[in-house]
Length: 195
Image (cartoon, rainbow, N blue to C red; front, side, top):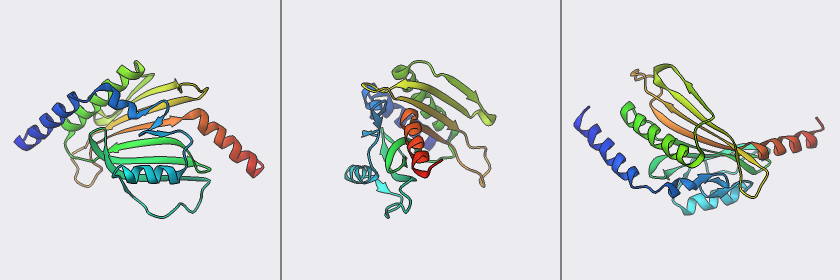
């Protein structure tokens, strides 16, 4: 491993080793990135701008029935993109994707750190799916939302770079979905459209 990559990996490892487990509560059953489930896009836009995140788009969505908003910034000590999904201007899904890199060793470390912290917080994953090139997905399904009948699903995946400069690079992603809220919003949408 080149000296620079080794130093970067060592620094990230030291940084993350010092992160308390509570910092991973920024994404959890009550919401995502300190944003509660059900928030509207204006609240999320204002909150993330105040926290120093840069919006990927500056105009309001044309279709308030179903859309996504993305922001670049640092989340839990990792640079990447936060994306929020909405139905009827109600937030029901949040996703974080790390910066892309061609350093598979770094993604191995980050993937291990994320999966270790998620397992400490939520128990063993419900599923593990292995892909080609060593890629893998971990799922935690049906996690309860405190003081609610809602359930959330978490999907974490690690994608490794295949060495081809023309293809996607390595990254780690985590997606939190309030499945119960999503189903209620979809039913409401169907009811409004008469289906």
